[in-house]
Length: 235
Image 1 (cartoon, rainbow, N blue to C red):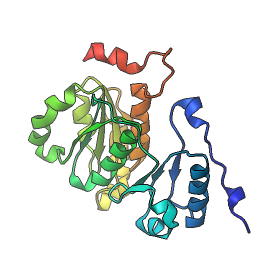
Image 2: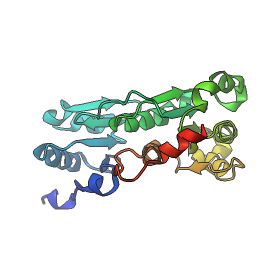
Image 3: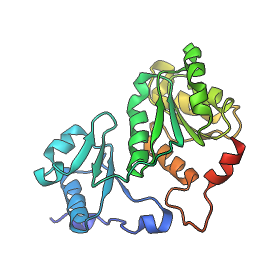
């Protein structure tokens, strides 16, 4: 039975909303991924692949494997070339611990796909808050700060009280016992007293990056001024 009918790709998404369709590889068969990449190659289109497991990668046809820029830490793949990086960095990614680095890299790889560089500030959790304070001046001027934390996830609240830009919290599944696979981190961020803190789903680095891209006005209609223009006056 042919699987081609199972796949319907959205090649016009960027024209509608400014962001391309990304391919979530988790749960997809290698056969389905092959069909998707065949369609992209036929149209000379590019795709960002997320949650691409190493075993899926090794089973892809060689013609597709050779075209993929794969990062095993973030489990992301670039099928095609990312956009050239902008000269100005407008997003900081702040992580509580190095155990959160896979989510950090998913964020930075998604941003880089659209040409947005990111400042990564890792292992600055509140258990040693001096580490964050050593780097806060680098972070403070950024229009967007994405804060990645598991365990008790106190870091987004602290950062939210120190910077004036948009703060996006990403709870991670790092932790054990009552951390409950990231549920405690999620609830802590949702209950934060930091005004205006936005929160994504657990481990959703891709979603946080896309939110940042929307805030920054990446690929927005030039006739509509991006939010970044108003943020500059507040910083």
